[in-house]
Image (cartoon, rainbow, N blue to C red; front, top):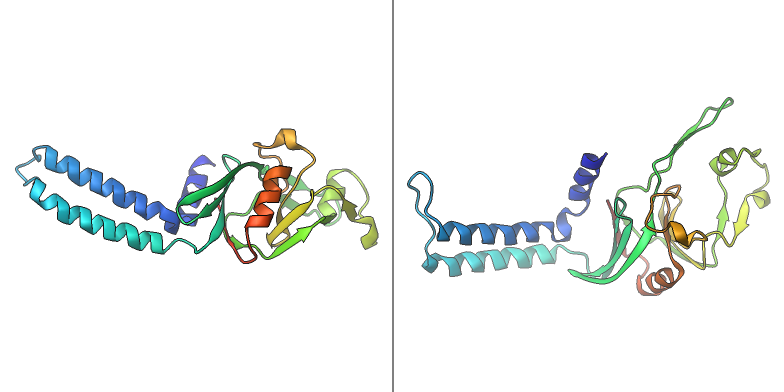
Length: 216
C-alpha cells in the first residue's frame, strides 16, 4: 500500500514542481562531480563550465515553474492527511485533514454491493461551492448503521454534518467540515476530505471555482 501511494503521488504531482526538484538535484550532482576525480579516467567538469551548467538548470527550472497551475490550487496528501493551498511554488495555507479510511463495506444478502471508502487520487477541480450544505445520505450510510434504506428523499437529508462550507470536486466527493475534529489527522472518512472550521472557512473564501485539486 505504501509503495502504491508513492507511485500515485509521483504521477499526480509530476508537473507541480517535481521536475524542478530533480533539476536542482542534477545541478548539485554536477557540482559534486566537478569537485571529485572521476572514476575510470573520465573528465570532471571544471569550474569554468559551471556557469553554463547553472544557466541551463535555471532555464529548466523556469520551464517547470511554467507548468504549475495559475492562481490558487489545492494539494492533498492522503497518507499524511494534509491539505495545502498553493500559489505557484508557495504554500499559502496548510491544514490538518481527514481522508478516506480504506475500509470495505459489503452488503449482506440482496444486491450484495460493496463500497471502498477511499479518497480518490488524481487531478480534479472545484466544481461547486456550497454554504450550509446538507448531506443526502447514500444507501451505504444506512447499511453501515444497520438501518433500512428509505424510499423517500426527505428521509435521506441530514443537516449540520458537513459543517458550514463544502467544495465539491466531482463524483459526490467534497472538501467539507466535520463534527469530529478530534479525529483530524487520521484516515477515518468515507472518501470525502474533512477540514476543521477555521481552515475550511479560509479555504472556501480563498479558492475560486474551477481551481485545480491534486490528490495523492
